[in-house]
Structure formats: structure tokens, C-alpha cells
Image (cartoon, rainbow, N blue to C red; front, side, top):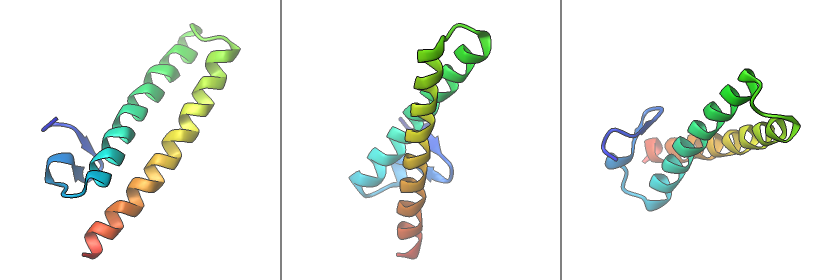
Length: 77
């Protein structure tokens, strides 16, 4: 866990559980998106796989927006 980073946020340095959860969720979602992109690029994913990729990318976009907001709040303190 000590090496897991998301942008400028280091999970170990965060005080809020909400910050830690958002950062970890973003990290996991990013890895899922990367793996699914590789599957689609390699032709291993059919139409359902491409649909899943779009859903994962949308989820990642939401998580990244939420994390950016949390980081702004933290930096303002």
C-alpha cells in the first residue's frame, strides 16, 4: 500500500478515510481500464468487451473528478 499513488496523492499521507477510498478506487479502476483497453486493442474483446470498456472509462472519469475535488479541498485546508 505504501507505493500506491494516484496523481499527487499518496494514500499513506491522507488523513480522511474518504480520501483513501477514493484514491484506492481510482487506482483499481485505472488498472481495469488499462487491461480492458489492451484486450480491445488485441481483438480479444467482442462487442460486450467494448461496451464494458466504455462503462469502465466513464466510471474512471467520475472517480478522477471526485478525487480532484477531494485534493482541492485538502489543499485548501
